[in-house]
Every structure is written in structure tokens, then in C-alpha cells.
Image 1 (cartoon, one colour):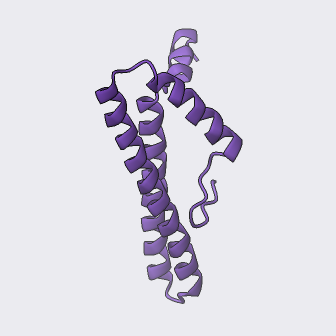
Image 2 (cartoon, helix red, strand yellow):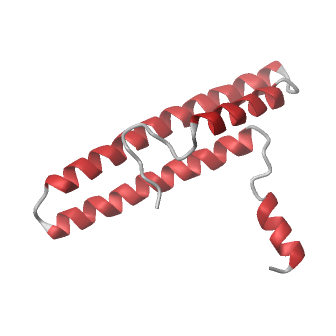
Length: 113
């Protein structure tokens, strides 16, 4: 299971730098308007990931301080939603940067795995 602490995301910094470099290369092939729209979308998604990451950290911290088991479980469920939102944002960013996010799944389907 991934560990989310405050603003830390599942990708390492080198992975993120590589993805952003690839994304910038992809954005160079677009018109100015398309590029600005995608850059704005990427900026909003990064901000959302930052907020969700902070929320995950707050939920973890709060849950560790709460004695009520039902409340801890509720916080855990909410935390899982925030983790899911981070994953959704990462996927949306990959799509905006031109990455074929289903490449591995397509290969498995072709191979019959």
C-alpha cells in the first residue's frame, strides 16, 4: 500500500521530472491555445494532488489521535477517497501529456493474459 504523507506523492522526484520533461516535449507540438489549455489543466491537477496529499496526512494524523473505532474507520474511508483522487489526477495528467496510459493493459489483452 502506498504511503501518503502530507504533500508526498507516489512518484519519485526523478520519475516526476522525467514525466514532466516528456510532457513539455509533447506540449511543444501543439498550438498555443491548446498548449495553454493543457498547461492550465495540468496546473489545476497538480494543485488538486497537493491538496489531496495534505488531506491524507491530516486524516492519518487525526485518526491516530481518535479513540473511537467507528470514527477511525470513517476517516480511513475518507482517506482512501483522497488517495483515489490522487491516482485519478495522475492518470488525467498522463493523458494530457500524451502518454498511452492503457499500453500495458492493451498488451495483456493481445497476449491473452
